[in-house]
Image (cartoon, rainbow, N blue to C red; front, side, top):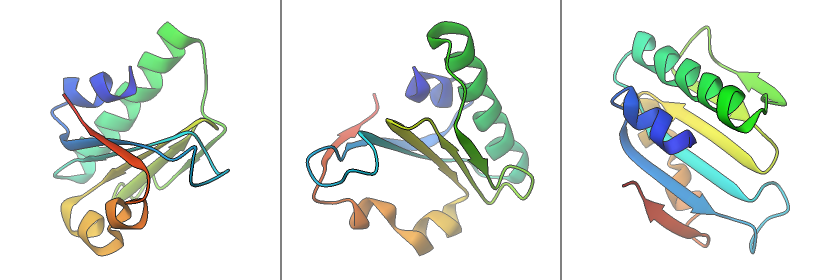
Length: 106
C-alpha cells in the first residue's frame, strides 16, 4: 500500500527492503525519491492518508516533513524514507541495508 501511494504521487526509484533477518529495528524499509520539497511532502501525505484509510494505522514517529529533504515515517514494522535525489545519494541506505532482501517496485 505504501509503495503504491508513493507511485500515485510519481515517486521515483521505489525500493522495498526486507530487513527482518538482519535487524530488529523493523521488518521493512521503503525508500523512494521526490524531486522537490513539494513532491516529498506530497508523497509523504499520500502514504499517511493511504495507510490511515485502508490499514487503519498511524505513524509512530515522523521526521523531516517540514524541511522535506528527507522525510521519514516510522510505522514500527515499516519505515518509510522519502528523499530528494542528492540526499538519497549521500546517505545511500540501499547500500547500508544491502544484506536485506531488496524488491523493486513495481
